Image 1 (tube, helix red, strand yellow):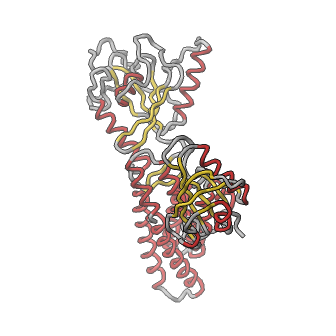
Image 2: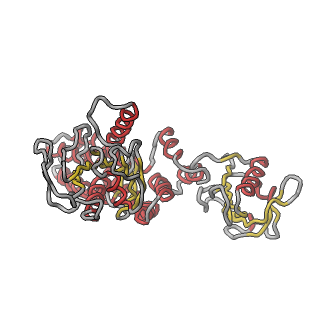
Length: 443
């Protein structure tokens, strides 16, 4: 018997309305105990019913609208109800507390959506798309998440899975009955089709990296990192002065560039002098930490004294030469970097020259790394599963050509396991716990 859970479906705070959600076997019974109405909600399913929620002493808590969804035609697949009350934290909390006292229990984060998944209303790809839609920060991200919620990722994965199962059956049949020469051709033809589908799917996704889209600007003191970030953001993010070393802590700003939600990070000036103050050493440590965890690096140097970036990151930085409005004189050729007369790499934060092109370069690099802004949003875990499927199918293709059928069968089984992970088939409970813990309470 499924416990009946309750939670607010809207954030706390002052608002016009708030929503309280209930789901579970005793949903109808709880409504009967706390709701007075001319028309009984449970006898008028999927219709908004006017009523009032009353307290234990019979006094009215609030006039509300109630809609009841009998199983299995509800979001969770269970008996479910939503109560719309007046906004404000106190009113909705009072209704939640009334339901808890009557027999419901507080819902865990994402428990409504988890029940929908466990009751077969949605597969895991759709469930995870819901949290991506909630977290979307741009219209493009909304589009991608909506497509995933409608089943684009799950449907493509299911199609690939069915083809893999067919291929596996043919390989196993060929192992048992080796006198069928056409089997290899059938298998190779299907594998080629599957590889094309996976590559097409991979081109449609947008990976949400663990580090997010953090673009870290670093460079020597007073090269104009802060001014450049302010120019890109179109607002004052960091303090700008002529005095070197103004920025000590890492300063960040969230901006939207071409539909991508990007976090621009300004860091303290890079110094190699060992005789630094304690504050400068800590600033250098924070800057290095940001560089090491960046999604993209921009090494900012200046026209009058261009220098190459230090080698302490696996990422290849985009080298940007700032202060292009100044004349070049007395450049140390041993320290200098080649100044490319390329808009975007040669910029002036002061005049704005090259900044628009630099923004375009940042967009292109992030799109190349993470996929299109309106792509199907997938997590690092999902991307790992997709990569596993691709590698396993490619390897199976080679094994078939080399007549290593038993090994090819193992590769296909690994690929099928990858599709299972994307769809949530036979996934470990602790993995599901982690996925749904990312959801807000009430969803």
